[in-house]
Amino acid sequence: MPQTEAQARSCKKYHDQFDDIKLRVPKGERAVLHAHAASQGESLNNFLYRAVKETIARDNAKADG
Image (cartoon, rainbow, N blue to C red; front, top):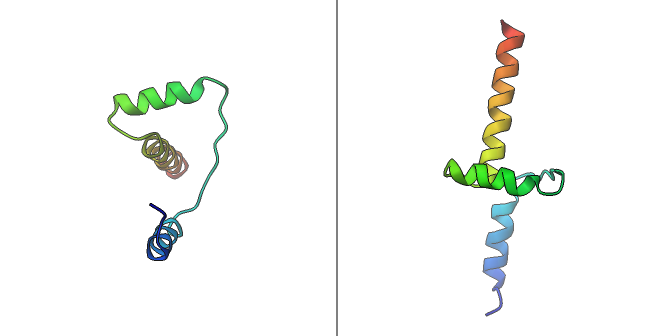
């Protein structure tokens, strides 16, 4: 069944809340990252976001200390 106009608007409104970042990794590395994320009970997106946030916090702590 085709998407209704209301569904399309709702989808666009949801996606407009986010910025997209493209990450390029060597062939085969995506599977390694995906497997690790799954072993932690996370999606690949959530795992990468958490890794970035933790690295920023660690870097900021080093700069402050």
